[in-house]
Amino acid sequence: MLFDTHVHLNADQFEEDLEETIERAQEAGVQYMTVVGFDRKTIPKAMDIAERYENIYAAVGWHPVDAIDMTDEDLQWIEELSQHPKVVAIGEMGLDYHWDKSPKDVQKEVFRKQIRLARKVKMPIVIHNREATDDIVEILKEENAAEVGGIMHCYSGPVETAQECIDMNFMISLGGPVTFKNAKLPKEVAKAVDLEHLLVETDSPFLAPHPNRGKRNEPAYVKLVAEQIAELKGISYQEVSETTTSNALEFFGIQSQ
Ligand SMILES: [Zn+2]
Ligand SMILES: [Zn+2]
Image 1 (cartoon, protein in one colour):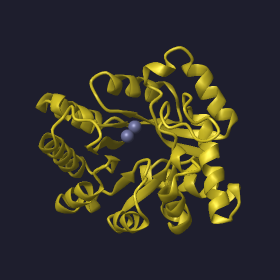
Image 2 (image 1 turned 45 degrees about the horizontal axis):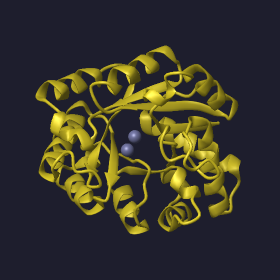
Image 3 (image 1 turned 90 degrees about the horizontal axis):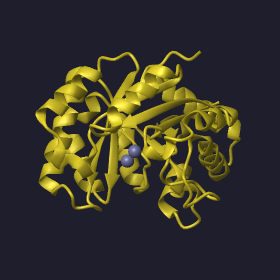
């Protein structure tokens, strides 16, 4: 059994074969997923998928790359959606310094607003971080994100920062990069962080794990991530899949079935 904690089945890349993709995931043992919506187009699609499939949940938030587009109405909309029974987290949110569509100060403000919203509705947050680790940790501290906790999605930072985030009630979610031969940091994190603080994800359709690197990613491949963690920790695949699944169920507050 596996829980892919971060998928974009709502992306255009799955328009043609969503049903088949979900079937392949189930055949690979992926029983649960969280679909992430992060703008005006992908949020309704995430809600639609979560409403149609029993074991698929939704996270709703605003992506830092598009921070400049977020209005007060959008924030209000996310707050309303947070009350939906299938919504389990606010996000993804965070900082992305790789692309320069939204200036840093705008990204930071939109990030802070969403943390405050999550604290108001008492929901955990999903963090997107690209080349912005120090600023993210600083804002999480300043905004007291520890009160709700969250997930460092597709974490690729150093072990020390992972530990700092764990101390703020965050889970560390590993994705495809942990399987890449040259990905030193994710492998170190997989070894060093206790299994009780780890989650697995694909971030489909992005970041496909080895040996599918460069192709469209899909939730079935989360098995490759779990297998790699098992190998790095020197424990069984079964232990990794069972523990990360129960971690995710507990984190999202889902009753297992
Ligand atoms: Zn992301
Ligand atoms: Zn994502």
